[in-house]
Length: 298
Image 1 (tube, rainbow, N blue to C red):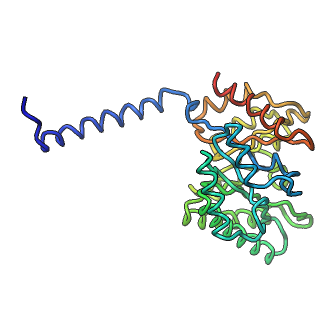
Image 2 (cartoon, helix red, strand yellow):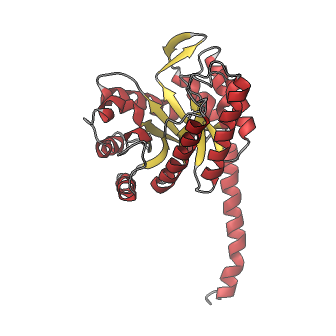
Image 3 (tube, one colour):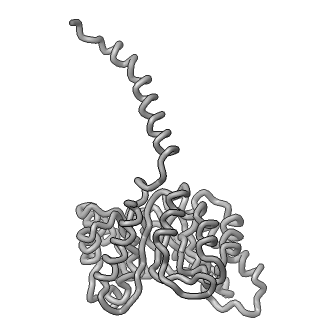
C-alpha cells in the first residue's frame, strides 16, 4: 500500500477539525453546565486565622489542595502588605506554588469604596483598584472582586452617589480590560441591597469586563431563590454561603435547590464557598465542600 502524500493528508484536516468543533459545540448546547462547574474556597473562610497569622497563605494553599478544591479565591487582605500591592517576587511565588499544587487562583478581591462623599478618597480608591488589577493579572486571577461602597452618604441624594459608583466602576472595568481582568462587584448588603439595585449598576456600567460576584448571603429582603435566579445571568463568580436570609429569616442554604438553578443556567466556572465561625475552621470548610460536591455530582 502506498503511503499518503503530505498533500493528501492535509486535505483531510479541515473535515476532521470541522467535525470535532461541531461535536464540542453540540455537547455544550445539549449538556448542563455540570461538567464545567468547579469548586473553590473563598479565603475569608479562614479570616481569623489568616489575620492573626496562625495560618499562612502557603498553608492555605496546601489545605485547599489536600481538600481537593479546584481553585482558591485568594482575597487580597491576606497578601503581604495589603492594601499596598506585594512585590512581584511574592506574587509569583504564590502563583508557582498554587500551580504545583494543582490549584487555580480563580479570583482575588479588595475593599474599595466609591460611595465616599470625599472625591479625593474616591480617586484613591480607584487607584487602589487599578493597582490590584495588576496584582490579579500577575497572579493569573481572571476576576477582581470589588464593592460599590460602604460609606455613610446621608445628606446626599442616592442618584448622585450612584453616579460616583458607576463612574468608579466604569474606570475600573476599562483598566481591567487592558490587563485581562474582569471587575466583579459583590452585592454586599450596603449600597447594593437588592437585585434591582444591582442590575441598575450593571446596566449603567455597561462593560463586557464588568460582572457580579453573586453573594447569596446578602440579598435579604425578599424571595432569596427568585432573587438569585434573576441575577445568575450577570454572575462571573459567587460567594456560596452556609447561612442565608429568605423572606427576612436566616436559614441554612438549600444547596440542592441552588445548584439545580445554577445547572439550568448558562453559568460555567467556579463556585467559591464561604464559611463562618471561630472554631473548627477546616472541618467546617470540608463538610460544606463535600455537600457542594454531592450536589454537583447528582
